[in-house]
Length: 157
Image (cartoon, rainbow, N blue to C red; front, side, top):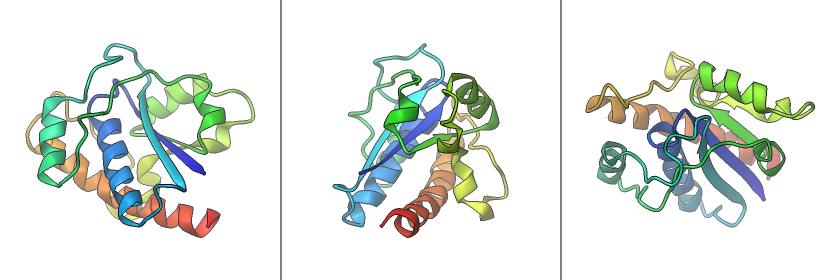
């Protein structure tokens, strides 16, 4: 079982969107029994909360249900539980590096490292942007999710 966790700041916009998009792609490819997906935040402000209603609405328009996801804080244990710990932006990557136990750094990357054609390295936080910001996040996450899944299939299966 390959395990992937997506991490943003509060775990209510970007990372649950990535979790939902990637899980749907994994299921669509018939790999649900081989790849586990989760999300977390580097901050604890929203622990236990559902994703932002705007993120849920944007995802629902694309046939992805985020309603069962609940925010949690990333922990040191994530670095032994998950094969891939993927940050949404350089700031969250830096926070994860501080949390990462020695010798586990190989698990860390930016999500958009798997979308080289995206033209950027960060998934922007749509929380204060609103509207089209959530659509843009979905576009970036879908592109990176396809690249990530191709990488996992090539590397592990």
